[in-house]
Image (cartoon, rainbow, N blue to C red; front, side):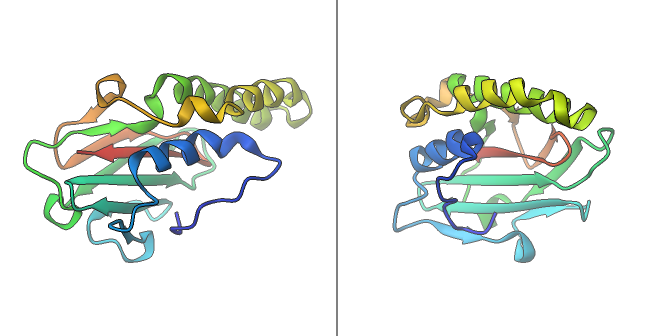
Amino acid sequence: MHDAVPEYHTCNLTYPALGLRVAWGIAEDDVRFIPYWRNPAVKVEDPDVLASAWTRPNGKAMLMVLNLHKDPAEAAVMLRLDPAALGLRSGFKVYDLESQPAADEARRARIAWLAARRADPNAADGLLRIAREKADREEAFASYAIADLRVVSEGEVVEIEIPPRDWILLTAE
């Protein structure tokens, strides 16, 4: 969310996102960061939803969207993209970057753990172990094929579900 690469620490649940961000090209010199606190390129009506963007001159943008809500009923998120501000070409699509097969498996495990933790924090340890095992395969997240990703929008309006207190990584190209 803040244009900084999270450090590797004991919580490896972010490893898939780190690998996919690198595969997208976030470490390249031509990347431009658009922070959520000053983001005219991605409009979000809900103040409890934050969206940062990274753009590249090759017509690609990456979005990280965070749902700060606590209520499970608050999972529906709507974004309005400004293609020109994001440097997107006409006919762009928005893809769920985490639908890359290995990352999707890790995300499902992370969401199951989060849901279990909300229901009973003491009973979630086993699911946390499984989520960490799914996420601790860095080489599995080092690349993606656009054809393997789920399309979430074919235009400027993006409607997605993000569980409360969770985030999603999208790419538009």
